[in-house]
Length: 184
Image 1 (cartoon, rainbow, N blue to C red):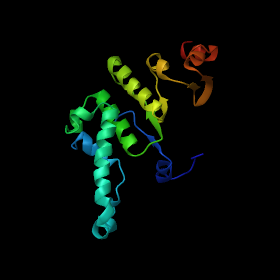
Image 2: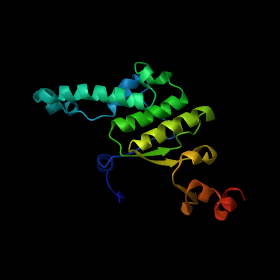
Image 3: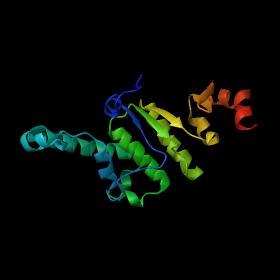
Image 4: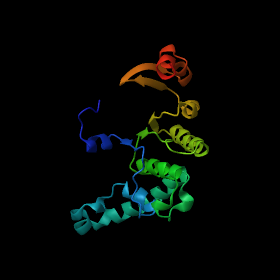
């Protein structure tokens, strides 16, 4: 239970969320956006001045890890481009890359395919499914159920803040209460 915990403790547990509207550092490169999400002992003034041994090596490791993360989300071929040059689907994947770089074990995604062309939506969800196979857990809030259902293992339907159904996507989509609430 993480209720009431400060954000830094939640982060330490590996729970990271992304936002419906991506918020990258637009003037930084894609690589720099990913590196900015990582911890580095050199970011602390005392370490930077007095403990140079160690943090430089971490910086090099972070660079390697950043390239690896970018490859996992399909952005490795544009690492040197500024974030403002990315399209909507690529910005969503940059958010996922930043969460991975920060050491996420569980990533809460707020509408990862919201506002994205359906062609790219399937591409995003395919990347997420592949990341899930590598051990990352995703909690996805999404309204485009028709697109996401084939990728989901488990689903919840809510109405006015309360869970009204849960189970496999097929079970939830065929639940009479869900049909009544959402279709009428």
